[in-house]
Length: 145
Image 1 (cartoon, rainbow, N blue to C red):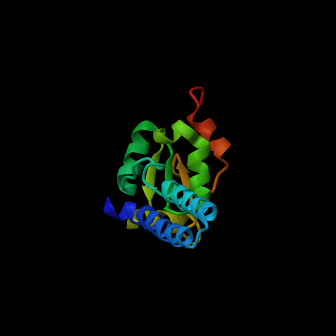
Image 2: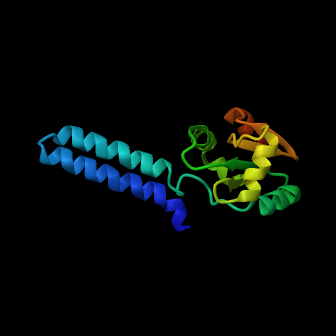
Image 3: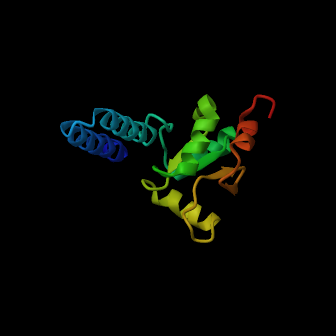
């Protein structure tokens, strides 16, 4: 769990250091903007944005039982963040696997993407879809689907 917070904490500390240096030089407005930008980046990369990740094997087992898609992602990925943010509250209904913390998940993604760790890779009914349109994923989660 601590590893998941490493990047956000590092971003917040670096942003604070840069903003402090700027404010000491008298650039209060710029310092505030820089600090805000770093804090937003820290928040977006924090575990608060993404639902809790589980292992690939467990995600695949759960998906077999409940039919929900599995999303393979990694921290810092802009496309993963786009998918997560565009799904809104529906994202919690998916099974999320962080490929940086799960070697089995990373292997699944490489197998689906010609050896590349291209994310997000969404697996629906055993079939991988690389960087799918968030609207399509939302449709999969709609009550009528």
